[in-house]
Each structure stands twice: as structure tokens, then as C-alpha cells.
Length: 102
Length: 102
Length: 102
Length: 102
Image 1: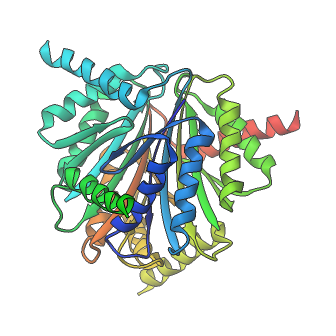
Image 2: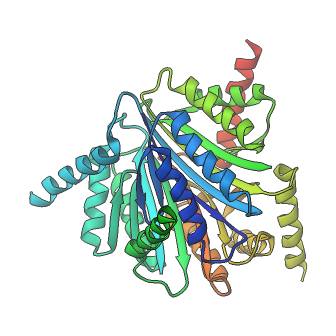
């Protein structure tokens, strides 16, 4: 299973790009893929084709009325691991709490 | 003010790197800089030197016992905007809810 | 047309990952897609499906014997622009030379 | 030693950002730090402070007249290795040529 974080912004629409980001979020939300939003991007969990299809749909939508688009994608594949949208944070926080106690 | 997301991993310590990530998180937590953890990285808010100093400290700690380290940093500067650790998500979610209603 | 830069590394194979990178490069080279290698990644030029198919093939090959893989992808879409593998650098260098002369 | 690749673009200046990129390149060129330009960014080689100072100077220059700036930084630290601006590509290409021959 894959965790994929991405952010996608038009370069030709001025400094406020919230309208375009929310269109992407609508596509993500309706895709059925599990996701978490953070201040710098959206993290999806699924198999390769599933998550990249969501990114492609966002690109297709944005390219309808944007002439230049910048996209960043970070992928973390780990064999046989599911539920990492929640699991990775919990695991690291548990370790942190142990460190802070000692 | 700047939002900075970063992730930092050793390449020479096998597939489980949680121990190293939690050491970084301890440094972040003790820095006093406002931050949010997500499944693919940590987002800091502050001015340039403040947030990059935190990243550097994490690097200094990790390079003590790791021979190869891969780091990704994404910075979003927006003039005069504070409180974006919370604000960016809220703003996008509000737009999304309007879209989903209509 | 799209410029896509990516890098893909196993996390569970130690600090020397050249063997895995060269396998990816073989896939890229045989794909027929135009590309340039740089010290931090490979830049491909083509349409969305074309360049993402190459990245997927590299992932499929690497996941055969790697348990954890980290991938970074950066995409720059610009409507109607071709030949940017060469063109972007030339254009910036010409501007630089003008600045340095004056 | 560190390889650092970065790209830095204003979001509020329209789709043509070559003027801003060439200003950064001037700063990089005059810094004395060894670098290579590629179609998606610039790769610097040096120690941590040296290369991050260059990135900071580019940010300071760009933030003078840009309200929103997006920056991506990728860092590859490898203990005791120098000359990787040239060395990494050569090493991978040599492996590739062996593969293609056999």
C-alpha cells in the first residue's frame, strides 16, 4: 500500500489559489479514496493506480482554465502495510512520549 | 510568515525508521515552534531562520549516526499571513462544503 | 506538455542505491521518452500518461525486491509549450548573461 | 557533503517567471558555490550552512517584490563523499552502459 502526498497549484492565478485547491478537494472527497488534509497538501492511501488516478483527475480539472500548474508528489511505499494514514503518526507519537518521560 | 513542511529519513538504517523520526520530533517539540504532524511530514510555522534552524538541528542529530540522509522541504511564504497552520485547512474546507451543498 | 522530475530510492538497501537507480534509468532509456539526468533526479518531457507510465514501470521493477521505496515527483505543466528540456535552461541563462553584463 | 536541489517561484506574477528565476541564478552564480542548472531546478554542493545560505539569499531577494513564493528543496547528505555533482551521474551511467551491453 502507498501513501501519496500531493499539492497542486496554478501559477497564473495570483496569490490566492483557494478556489482551485477546493475544486481538487472536491474531486478527492468524491473519489472514495481515504485521505487526510494538512496545511501543505493532501495525503491519500491506496494502491498505485488508485491514488495516481485521483491526482490525474485534479490535474485534468485544473488544466481546463489554468495555463501553468505546479505539482508536487511524494510517495511512500511499504510492503504489506495498511492503515498508515493513522498508524504512522500514532507510532511516532508513542515513541516521542516515551522519550519525553525518560 | 512561512509554512515549512519537511521529512527527513536515513537511507542506511533499513525499512523501519520510526526511531529516527521520533528523535526529530523531540527536537521539533522542544523548539517551541508551532507545528502539526501528518503521515508524510511535519509542518512548521514561523519566520525563515526559526523554521530552518529546527530542520538543521534535526539534521545535526541524525547525521551523528546515519551515513546517508534524504530530506524534503517545501516552503510556502505568504506576505503578512499568520495562523495558517489552522487557517489554510479551514478556508479550503469551508469552500468545499459550499460546493458540496450546491 | 509536461516536465516531470522524479527520484526513487529504496530505504531498505543501505546507503549505496546506485544499482537500483541504474535499473530505473534503463527503463527510462528504453521508454523512448525524452529525458535528462541530473545529480538529484531525472527530468522527463511528454504528456501526462506518457511520463507517469515511465515512473510506474520504475516503481513496479523496484518493488519486486525492495520493501520500502521513497519517491519524489515534481510536475511543471505549461500549456502549449514543447522543447522545454532544453528551452527552460537556455532562456534563464540568456537572462543571466544580460544581467551579468550590465 | 550535501547535494541540495531547489526551485523557487512566485505564485503572484503570472505564468512567466523567468525574470525571477534568473535573479536567483545570479545570486547562485555569484555565491561561489558549485552548482548545476537543470530544467526543474538548481543543484548545489557544499556543507549545510553554505548551501542553505544561498537559498535564503534567493528568498530574501524574491520576497522584496513577490507576495507569495513556493519553494522546494531536496537534500541528499552522504558522509565523506565529495564531487557528487559530477560523480553521481557518471556512476549511474556506467552501470547503465554495462546493463545495455549485456
